[in-house]
Length: 240
Ligand SMILES: Cc1cc2nc3c(=O)[nH]c(=O)nc-3n(C[C@H](O)[C@H](O)[C@H](O)COP(=O)(O)OP(=O)(O)OC[C@H]3O[C@@H](n4cnc5c(N)ncnc54)[C@H](O)[C@@H]3O)c2cc1C
Image (cartoon, rainbow, N blue to C red; front, side):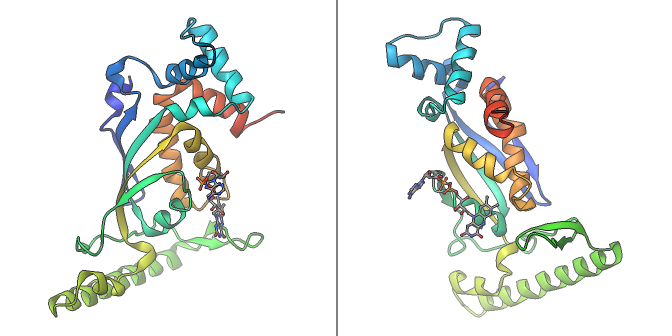
């Protein structure tokens, strides 16, 4: 099943996406990610698979007791296209390796901006969060204003480029948080679970939460079904 995961792309937000570029262990090895974790743990006493029931039990034991280093033996590499507001929060997670598009090298396109579906209201209890949404009429007016703002910004940007200004400076005219960016990024399963726990949570901003959910639902669960089950049991919904 993991064979088809490499190259799979899932759309996120209005113009974003996330694509799995590579996986370790690679599906061609016929060793699943879950088994790679179990095998790494068994190196402690120089053994390997003992049949799927005992293997799964061991994997659950490892996560339950936070014996996390075997989970670092699985790596996932993605290409991501997301607005800068998402990128800004993502890069705070130092355990991702990254290489990003350069706005000094590649010019931005006219439609490289995030347009939200709805306008969320400021939360009354949490100064950092949003709740509910503005009226439909206000939403429509705000979207029209945003599109006009993008158009004007892009014209300023293009005008500066036409006057010979460098791309690294012309981009000062672009609406920073909304610009779509593309990057390639890699992480191991242990640190990915940490990222997912924080960024799938209700208090994470919607624009990063949908990317974390896409990773979990479309890639993590398929690549690591036992680990996903244990993750839900011991980390997302711990009962002890
Ligand atoms: C809901 C939410 C709100 C947030 N609000 C803000 C905010 O208002 N302002 C703000 O600045 N940030 C904010 N953040 C970012 C937050 O403070 C963290 O920087 C971010 O979540 C990354 O977490 P991390 O350091 O655990 O992850 P990673 O950087 O992926 O690190 C994973 C783990 O590795 C270890 N580690 C990695 N690097 C080091 C290191 N150099 N030294 C010691 N240990 C290390 C730590 O144990 C760490 O938990 C927010 C995050 C969330 C989820």
